[in-house]
Image 1 (tube, rainbow, N blue to C red):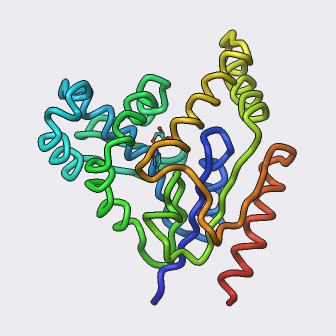
Image 2 (spheres, rainbow, N blue to C red; image 1 turned 120 degrees about the vertical axis):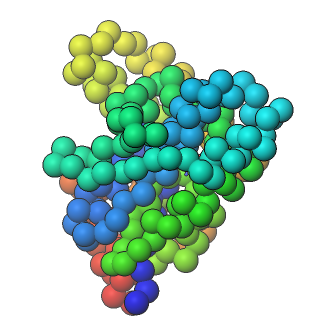
Length: 227
Ligand code: DC
């Protein structure tokens, strides 16, 4: 039986994570949050004191990447993520670990070491894979390739709303500058840069809410799966 695959790539803050979870629940598919893998690897290398020695101790780092002791456990409240048996579900979402992840993500050997683990998620009946290079390098065979984007301003505004809801005092201009810097790094890196696959369906969510984007995605996926 062919495993059905939906890839969702795009910049941070476009709503990929939320939509990937909704799609996985809707189709009863497995879910790969590939950003979490980079975050876990970044955290693990930091714990081992290797984050500043990625280039000089590349062999050791690559070995750690290939043998990462991680578990994704589905719970009623979402997915619990364990690193070496410890619950790091919250820790890996911090800006700090995001920085660790982006260092790790720029090293081709480390990306390569995470390849088999990502491929292993493709199991029947299907998979929703969320990331930056899901369609362009990890699952080029996917029947449904979606590129979800939104203007930097609208992504910054969403982030400000989230942080303010958490009681934090933030300035939109700081958040916008961070988003623009991260976009530039993701799009200009030589290995697996962020860009839409040639046959991707591109959705700009700047003026759309989650439900509207979900409607567009399921309509497109249903049409592709029916082919
Ligand atoms: O989506 P995220 O913020 O959790 O991603 C964390 C980092 O990992 C970010 O710097 C982009 C990088 N990443 C990547 O290079 N390739 C992926 N498939 C997913 C994430």
